[in-house]
Amino acid sequence: MFKNSALFRLHLIVFLWGFTAILGKLIHANAHILVFYRMAFASVFLYIFIRFFKKESLHVPKKLLIQLVVIGGFMAAHWFCFFYSIKVSNVSIALSCLSLSTLFAAILEPVIFRRKVDLSEVIMGIVIVICMAFIFKTEFNYKEGIFYGILTALFGTVFSVFNGKIFGKTSSGNIIFYEIFSGFLILSLFYLLTGQISQVNEISYRDLALVLLLASFFTAFPMLESVKLMKYISPFTLILTVNLEPVYGIILAYFIFGDSEQMSPVFYGASLVMILAIIANGIIKSRKMAKKAEF
Image 1 (cartoon, helix red, strand yellow):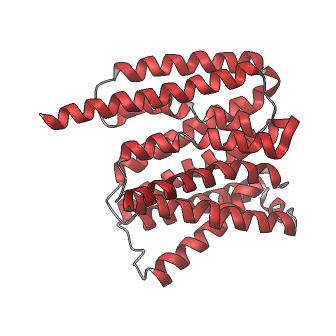
Image 2: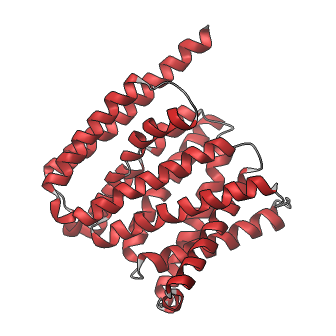
Image 3: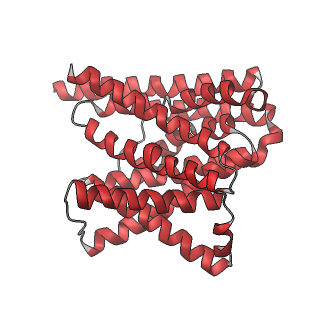
């Protein structure tokens, strides 16, 4: 019963993550303004939840804090590139490029964690590169969106891999809070140095309301909830389900935005093959882990 409930909640979270792309397109503000307010509001929500609802300490060691600040910078870059990709192309392009995260992880993880390169990951990587080549060829008019979509996947992978290195050193709530708050501070400093800080006022009340929704229900809540679910579901189930985010997002975008999200048959075919390759790789890994556990 608990497992079924957890699985439903997991799909709800992935659905919410997929919907962030929809909100990104509905919000008229520029990507750098959107990310600035998303991180600011999410930091406030997380602080209130941790300090006043959970009544937990936010103290972390200095060395860990520095690591969280660096990771927060990658998170800010990841979110900026994601929403910028949506602004200059569309939701479908931005989400399809997220499939490259698995390829980047296959390259980075052996280096960071000093493990052997997995043959199944190499094969999956080749499949993804071929599929992205087809998408780039047929959707060349979205080349800027594809470029920033690739950067989204790269920064997101770096952020996730390094998160894996620090997991367990403090509470998950603290990790999420300091990463988002650090990202906000880094963006603020960058905007101050580049003279863009005055532009953050260029946002309507409508957009502010949507960013508030994005920062709370579509950011802080799913991040905290996903951590809780790790008690009831396996990492394998989590990884496979999270890979459905582009599927949910692309389907939603098609029905909500209509013609502006209608892509070529090659795009949908290549995206489907990439998702199936990622799922197949996950199944192969799961079986290998099960065999190791037997011995």
